[in-house]
Image 1: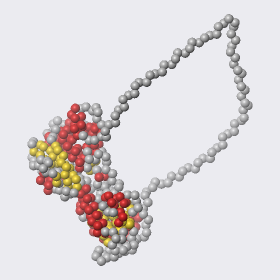
Image 2: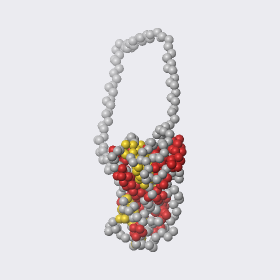
Image 3: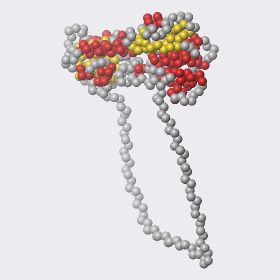
Image 4: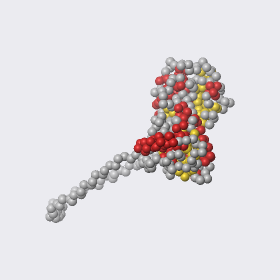
Length: 438
């Protein structure tokens, strides 16, 4: 969205908000285009740093797929629409859809509410500020128009949507064209110069034929020996072609065996990259640390080294997760991971440090979102560690206590903080002696 267009929409919003009224009994027709409505709702979010959103509009190649695959809405029910979103680890998203006559408007609103719930699950524990925005988000409808309102100031968003039905549309502004590089003027071609006319040369005289020198009588002609035949090299037998290897798959036992033995033969390039990063972690080679001190140092190294993969949280087609973000290659080499990448990396570090550790697959956000964490055993007692939730994304500097909130806690603490799992398959974490005390 161009800044000029945003400025026009913002000015229009100031007029709209003055004229808005309650939803009940209000008109359901509007002269506004859906992209104008979405832009106006976005523009009133003055507290948001993101000023230029990404956009998907009706007729774009990604529009129908995003409606169906992400929002659960049948594209056949929509005859126009505009979706604006921030992208990355930012939940803000505004969508205005114009529905076909006879479409199930209430069903569309329920689908948008389910979408909000799924997005909240994706942010739960990872980005507390964005999760709070999603917890207050809403989906509303008026006549043929349905709106998704994921915005920091929910009241302003609702009022801006309602105002589009009580005030005339702003000056028609065409959709913003993508930013293009300035045109480069091609230089005019230089005129082709005719080749210089060379003076005509007289035709060359044929050289006189050379005659063999006359031999004196009685002299035998010199006979030259036949040249030795060239030796043709015999090619070596065809080498045995190397069979193609299977695609790389992370294997903790293979990495641990190479770490303990020092052998590097036969490893995949990805294995070698992982080992290179591991060799640079001080706590793994420090023999003076106790098991608890190593565990704490490796936990802190992880959350300082990597971050939650923003591509895994982004709405819209711009969000591209990095490869292998679900295993240690993504975290150690790519410095980005999701919860399984965090938990498998922590399990690997504990194995190399000689600390018993298991990975626990479970859920969060009321059981609706997949999640994973670890259990470690110190002095015969189990402790729970959630390195992912100890590394949240926020606009403020994460305080030390927040970065250790889920370090060496009990299973009861996890239950109280939105973690659920198959409790019959894993030991109960009850240890408290090595809980983090700040």
